[in-house]
Amino acid sequence: MYNLIYAPYFENYVQLVKSDNLRKTLKENTEEMLEFLETIPEEKLDYAYAEGKWTIKQVVQHLIDAERIFAYRALRIARLDTTPLPGFDENLYAANAIVSTRSWEDMLKELRQLRKSNLRMIKSFTDEQLNAEGNASNNPITAVAICFIMAGHVKHHLTILQERYL
Image (cartoon, rainbow, N blue to C red):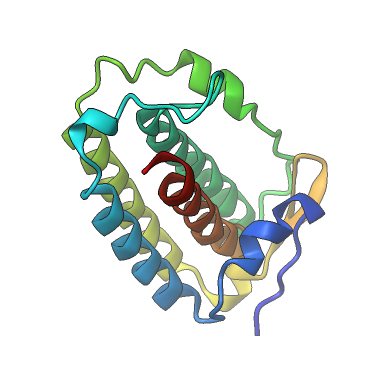
């Protein structure tokens, strides 16, 4: 049984995950994400659906950045590090990520390898480690909740890409 503790801010992400089988969910989420992203036409990659909104490449860079941060948080908490973990400003990250010079293939390769590595890490966690509780952004959170948030975060952004960009 998983102990899902997280800030209310993450509720929308967790609700997007319809299964309680963490490892299966993340594996399927990875496949869904990569299959979808690989279908995006090259001429759309620098498209933003409105003034001030991220381009498709910026959204994918955000997925890469958030994936790294979520995995780092999960690792720290699973290893029983009780040091409070700070939040991050996704808009600051997006503004300072230079995606215009990155190839789409390279970005997808990075995301694929990053998620594959994170899946291996999560697979190594025991149930006790997954249920470990820490603090991120001044809120209690468990490592397992972070893992479900990772999957829901991807689903959230894929939906936005489908509905507003393509």
